[in-house]
Amino acid sequence: MRRASRLHALLSRALAFGGLPPPPLPRAQLQGITEPGAASRFGAAFLARGGFSTDASAAAQDSAKPAAATGGEGGDGKTGKSEQGDAGKSVRGGPVSWLSFLLLLVTGGGIIVYYDKEKKRHIEELKNRTSAVKQEPSVGTAAIGGPFNLLNHDGKPVTEKNFLGKWTLLYFGFTHCPDICPDELQKMALAIDKIKEKAKIEVVPVFITVDPERDTVEQVRDYVNEFHPDLIGLTGTTDEIRKVARAYRVYYMKTEEEGSDYLVDHSIVMYLMNPKMEFVKFYGKNYDADSLADGIVKEIKGHQ
Image (tube, rainbow, N blue to C red; front, side):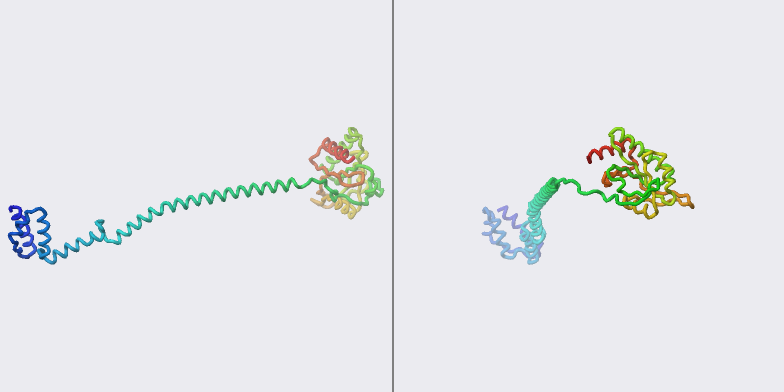
């Protein structure tokens, strides 16, 4: 009974705060409050009778709605759904990303393997093609040499036919050459003697001028006699010298011309011709007398 009186006092204060007079409670109802669970039943009955004011009841209902809508999470329903959607996406996105990365690795590895395989196959094809090419002997000779009509240092007409049946070594130069031509002709003379001494082979040395304007028959005769008794000097007209130089692919041109005094720039090459007056090999300035002699002997023996 004491607990019921205390509960009734609390309810009276609440009703006074709400601005409504406390409703009368029957004695039987007050006695029922003391029973177990009676307080809950009493509260429900009180609310059913409109114990609180309309504003307070609406506020209570409004405050309860969000909680019910959000399921106790707080905030509006959309936010909750968005968070759940984002969470779902992050969970679902993980395996897809790893799968894409794995597919990328597999694809890249496949491309690399395919490229290496194709590269090896291409190299093998090139090797097979190279090995399939047969090494055949070269056919023909270089287009060096040809017919000519000149005068020797004795003033007698000479053609290429005068040298048939002999190995011949030709050099193109001019008698007013300050150093190169004398050095080359001296090297030629030494090589000729070495070949004759070691291999018992006779090679005819020939000097052909590229300066027909100054190299007369007499001038050429005096010049060749300074190097070797077997050296043959040839000269001719401007057109004849031009023709033989073109046939042997010899370059020459006047330089530093001052009146009648000038130099002639020309090829520094010796040509080895076989007994048919066919070109065999040429020798440049880098050969000395010994290497020139050995090279000529090797070529002659190789053609015998």
